[in-house]
Length: 337
Image (cartoon, rainbow, N blue to C red; front, top):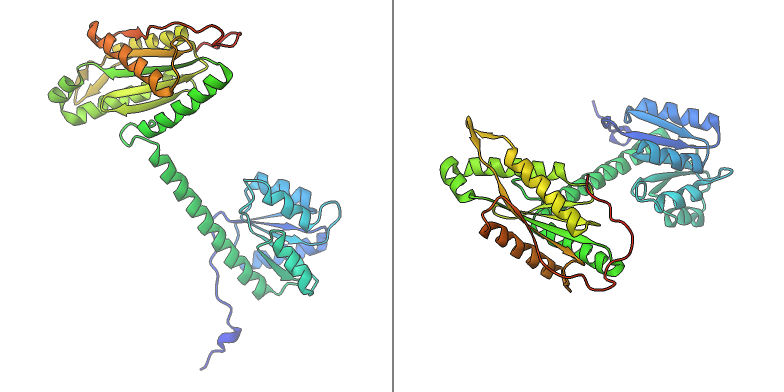
């Protein structure tokens, strides 16, 4: 028995958690479209809106995957919805299929130029509607997958794989950015360099896995002890660094002392043995020290760190310096809690 392939409609599997939005001022048309879409079994949720403005709000609220929108509507028509969605980062990639009864080419060209992904003639034939929805839904999924992978690659490029905190590259970028802001607006900025004491001995005694375990515990503590705007990074080996925006030298030393004390009292257990973890720290702040570049501020903090090491370890040293006249704007600086 021969099969007429031209009349065979391919089965389209439902997409988990996929959602569609129907935007039409006619309640009857919305009902008909809903029934047609429900029969396809492609979407887990179907939303409705009576005009473009309400439709746009629904797109942002519900994270809609694809939109079917009537072209002619009162208050806010299809063109209005396209303008709104194209100018919003959260919805700009959402495909919109415009429903239009017009067959003239200029209208369809204008619809596509306005930002629609496609158009569907009214009344929509179920097989055509199904095919167009399937194509654009798959394209949307591919776009989302690519965006997620790009975000993950960006995260990995700025993250230390062992500890999960920022890496050296991210630290350098953040320090440069915060230093520029501090210089431009004459606001305080501090850097804390942290080096674990006798880390080679810890590695020799407990192995590199034990050392890695200690580094992770230290990184977790650092993240807990700073504010959200601050940045904790692994600078290299057993060294970590913290960027403290809007933090004076006095407050930075207070933060460093608190961290030092908590590190010294922290219980880190590896293979049934408690690891002794202490750290030496160097603090440098501008405008307390007169520096012209971010690298110089970092060098001052590093020098203070070496001074802490030379003074017996497990202590905080502050870089010496003088405050240039008029270097800092007047007003109080929020201390860390």
